Image (cartoon, rainbow, N blue to C red; front, side, top):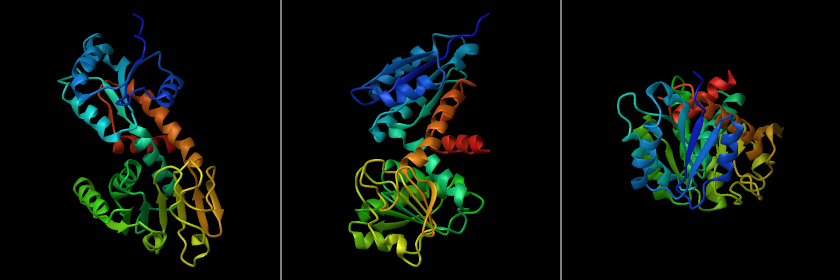
Length: 295
């Protein structure tokens, strides 16, 4: 009996399904891609049941789901609704990567780990309350350093109250207490990165967070990772293509430099979905796949 074709069903909360995610899916070796845009939680049950009940239990590993979209909170609601649809072994595997947040965070943390051990380090995440920043903090405070945790994680935000709220949430999820940090001015940003060994910039596209002069300071970070691909850079002096380049005494990564690993993790995760019908790939699971890929 011939094997069933591999079908990936892409769910997107945006008005149009992501072209980027669709192309990555096709390049990952699937046979068929079905895209659904403007999906709402109340739509999920019939869509997911359509994926579950059209093939026998032995063939369910040949159908999988992908959750994308720019609105991370909306996508997370779709994921919650999907989990409620499964029962027993009647389920399909899925990858959740809204706005690329899980694969990007996993790649960024792995790039940092390629340069230095996270244990005992002081980490600052600028734009730390956004989707990628939160996930970086979640990984570093949890699975990425479970046996040798960092000394501190500062979570930078223009709103101190927002930073405090996210720190409380992350403490519940990981058990690690991040330090809230207000970064509403260049002076406060400099204060937030002072003494940091590793700095991530995960702010909005096209906004320079760390301005000129930081690299010449005596206690400049050992590693900086800027995830902004739109000029100007989020960290002054970092090129978007930097991939471990050393500038003065700091190792630098830019968005494209991290993006190569992000794409490998993304494609590897999609391929993994078709190995079983029981994979649920979210933040930590995606990072673990990246670790396996690098070993």
